[in-house]
Length: 134
Image 1: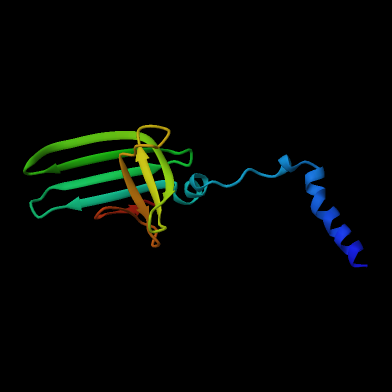
Image 2: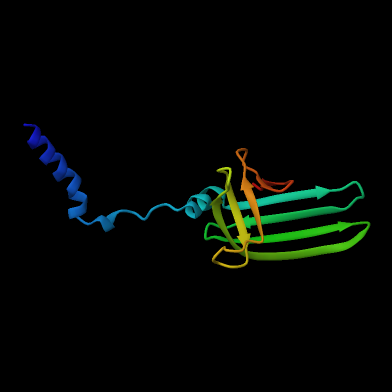
């Protein structure tokens, strides 16, 4: 009787292979997972004791691209306005944290900067904390 049970189990396990394993969905990559969870707009604002103000925004798109805007002004410097764009990639840091590497090239081998995804929903770049813009 045990031989019959094993044969039946093997037949059930073999059925998906017989009907085509390519019917399975593609594996979920870390980039896809991060894109679904982290795509959106982020904001970093900074003001120093001299009256200088900096505002940066970052838009992470689910297709793996980003846009970044910067404006800065203050009594001791001329106003600055700049924008950039490129590609972002998710990776696992040495301590196991999810990091987002941002750069200008699509292969992601030499990112310009990186952000860490924190448990409270913010992103961190060094001392800068980026907050989600609703």
